[in-house]
Length: 376
Image 1 (cartoon, rainbow, N blue to C red):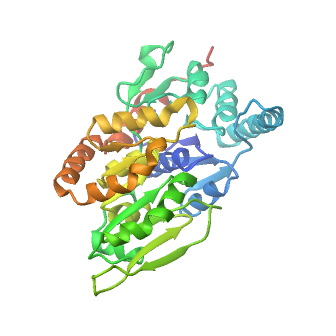
Image 2 (cartoon, one colour; image 1 turned 90 degrees about the vertical axis):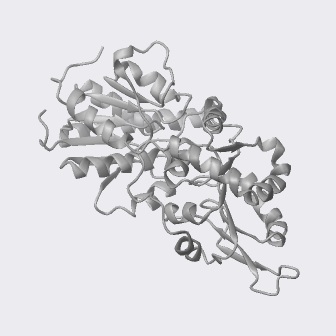
């Protein structure tokens, strides 16, 4: 392939915001180079909601359900993957893609296998510091695998591997703080703590936020909590601040946030899970955080993500078993501008802004430029 020749890419990336967001970022970057993409997503509400923001991109639902060992879950998985495989064959036949780029998750495997059967070049992107099942099992079929810096994939040929950060959507960019705070219905004159459990929310973080809101308000701290779709309704609670003699402080709960850039720009500190997508967005916006890894994440990947993030100076890690210490820790950090400035320096180092262009350059030069061949 020569530079400037438009091609079509299939991007299986549905199931969670952490898979879909980088797929959208890649589709945006490919479109800027004149290419066309079809983003293959699940039928989950989070995919439907997020994809609706991008009418200029093309999305197609693909059958798929998460893997599990319980008989009923496994049966659904096998049936949906079979349907996804045949849907993938039809897509490959009609779209004639130059390449398939998978981002992991349960929508990936069936499309990758369909593409391999038709001789379509395959690339995989792994965002987490512990490669997931999809990437580990499909690596043999891929010509290129993009991994986070210093992450290994045992048994995989070294010439397949490139180290790259997570592509971040164009809209994820720093906003003026006062404007961002006002967009949440909060007062820019007071500090803001954001609780963000990812696109699907986090019940323990939501419970902590509800319990901690009065104590935080007493210290002059406003709270904004993204509870997750299906985990409550939007709520606004105002608190009297003893001796303040001024405006009441507000705690805001919303089930879903369509404007992550403003949410993170409004925050002086974020309490978050440690999914790779959230961490990349925190680094891009430059917002310090306390990370509470999800204890049941597959292969404990969130703990690995968080440990690396902390080691690079982007924030602190607090285990969920110690969430009772979070209120005191948050108040302490919000009262320590020097320490927060140090975290922002670490976030600048973690922000891999060139990742998107790096990935597209490699796809154009080294993947779709090669003649098609069948993988072993």
